[in-house]
Length: 284
Image (tube, rainbow, N blue to C red; front, side):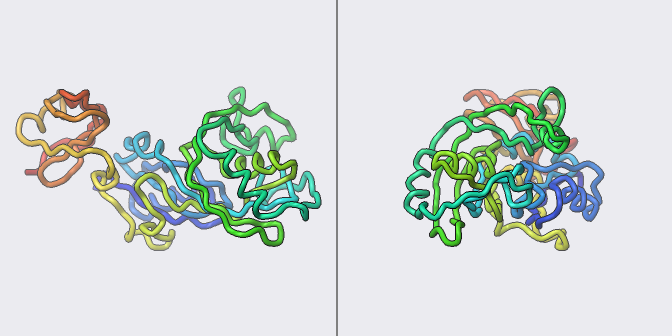
């Protein structure tokens, strides 16, 4: 097998890179990557790309994701979660569930979010978390994020369970921080868990010690994109980057009659132009 995608239910206490490396080693792949970093303490769905499927990462990573987490009020840490050094504590007994739920409407839609210092985002060529660990206070960039479909529970013992769908690149820890700031209280995130990434669900994922149950072929991993079955000269031409007629618009995938992924490309409503060629031969 030249490549595939593994849906991992990552546990706490391991980086996304190490988790992906373990999956690759267990499945006999030297080349690997993952689509969307999870914090070491965060759990849930990590999409691991293996072998040739690493070339599919740009088409998988940019999709929306869903998370569950606890927002903990009355506390602020340098990492914006419960693993960090406490910077501030305050009495939040005046805050009720309705106060928090009402504030969520202000964090719905598209808005600017400041990236946490403890992140892999580079500032002047250096990772933010490395600068933060060295005691520096880097000026972190802002980025546009889109947040939808909030669900909330009850505020108990300064914790409220939340669920939310976000665009790629959104930081859950920063959401907790910013909601707290809007209410003039400190707040962090805890028990962050990714339950969805694009078309993939945590219900499809397997733990690290079950390496076979959640393995997808490259064609299966591109679910959600229009699929074009090709034969003959069109299929052979793909390997040379040749376009062919296809009456659809947008990103699409070309597969042979056996369902194997040949290429990912873009259709302008008239022609399919291969952009990433995955196969070297066609199976009839």
